[in-house]
Image (tube, rainbow, N blue to C red; front, top):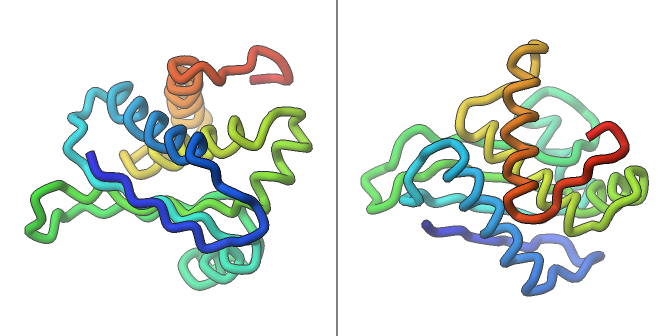
Length: 153
C-alpha cells in the first residue's frame, strides 16, 4: 500500500498523527471492502479556494465542498494499482468539525473514509446506496476508534 500526502494548504498544521490517521483509515477502508492492500492512493489537502475551483472544473458545481474523489480504473503499467485521488478541503473540515462538535482529526478521518468508498465505486444518490455506504464508513470509523454514537451518526 502506497499513500501519498500532498499538503497544499498552509492554514492548518497537519501533524504526523494526522498523516498516520489517513493511512489507518485508507487501510481499514480497503479491509472493510475485502480488498488487498496493494493499492496506491493520493491525498491532497487544499483550501476552500482550490477545492471550489476543482469542483467547478470537474463537476460543474461552482461551490466549495469538503472532499472530492477521483477514482482511477487503470494501473498504467505500474507495480501497484492506482485506486485514485482524494482531495480534502482542510478549511471546510475545520468548519464541519466545529459545526458537528468533534475534532478535526475525526472529521478528516471521516472525509477520507467517505472518499475511499467513492473510489471503490460507492455512491449516495439513492437511499439504499447511501445506507450501504454509511454503514461501511461507520465500520471504518469504529475500527479506527473514532466512531461517535450521538448527533445522528
